[in-house]
Length: 168
Ligand SMILES: [Zn+2]
Ligand SMILES: [Zn+2]
Image 1: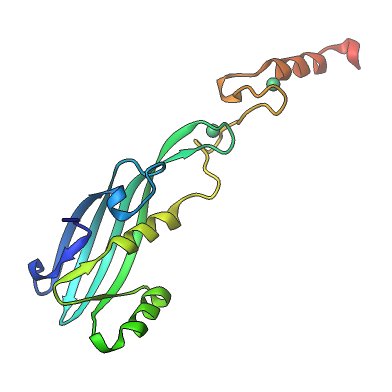
Image 2 (image 1 turned 180 degrees about the horizontal axis):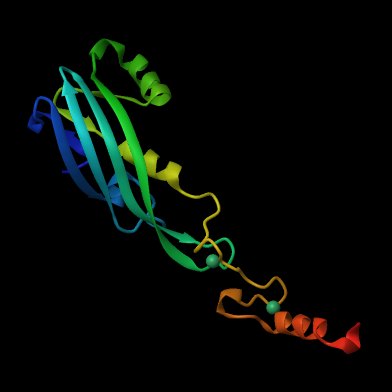
């Protein structure tokens, strides 16, 4: 069973610290970017039928640097804050609206499914233009060489010219 589907019957009445783990594909995250497992560390507080969850979801994303095109792994830690109420069968449509708009979740008294929330939290944390490192120098626009490996031929050529008094 997927550990991101919490079994509420095993929770203590007040505060719980819960650690869960599942394969990225069990959270419907795409294989190409998410190759390892996803971990969740949650503080879960239960007051009657209200379940409040705070914690973080941790996973490693496999990305390509936008500057040098090198592939690298980036560890993402996404904060999660959720509130879940017990569902009433009469208001299913309204509940779907609330889940979408207010990040409210619903449980049936036995199970609480955190898969969708965990997936969303990770996707939100994904960088739009990933860099392998802050100061990546990227590829030379002329020769395409990786400038992280040292100056390319065009760079040393232009530097040579600038330093040559005959050119001025
Ligand atoms: Zn790079
Ligand atoms: Zn070059």
